[in-house]
Image (cartoon, rainbow, N blue to C red):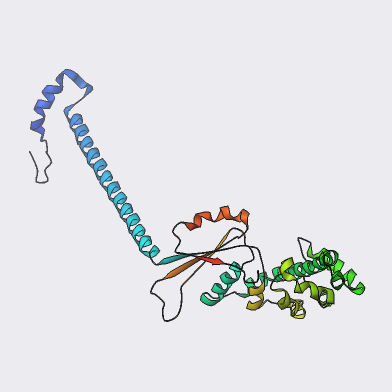
Length: 289
């Protein structure tokens, strides 16, 4: 008979034909056991079908979630403007990058400011080395060479500072070293050399740091944002910041991604792929050259 749930139920007297069918098999198999096998197989089939349906539902849910995320990312990308900073080395790209960070982000925290101490001290040593070595070069090659000759009392100081400036690891700037740097900086020959700065590629930060030697050499010195802006450090690889413009003309949800890249020739292979999808290129050139 068939029950209300749709399954067939075998009563005892309905098993007679099973017994006749299975008689030749003797005691090897009985009708009840055959019925049990059929019932088990039907249950196993239903269970497998149920698991397949659950797996399909899970896969469909995952696919829908992926599609939703892709759609969200696509919408978000429409509001992202990609800006690429380009220009020769020492053209001011990194200075613009730092200005953007100060204007549109939270600026530099104390840890970031302190990280610039060795950079700024290295700038001081490297600059005084350029001036000392440049003075010697001009004294040998220029017609009015005498004005580029460093005074005898400062020659030993110049030699010492030039050696320090040529190191890879520069010492922290002390009061004593700062005093020696200031003495050499005020030498008439070094001042004449600085006037020929374009020939020697003297950094633009030179007068700023030379005028602040006492403060830079303080044992408790923490760089100011102006110090950080004047600090020169070579950019290697790609550096990125993300910011939103502020003011009356701000567009809702508008986001800018600014990329600062190394300007040296050997750095270019690291950022050439950034041209893909770029909104604008900001090309920098040094007006001092």
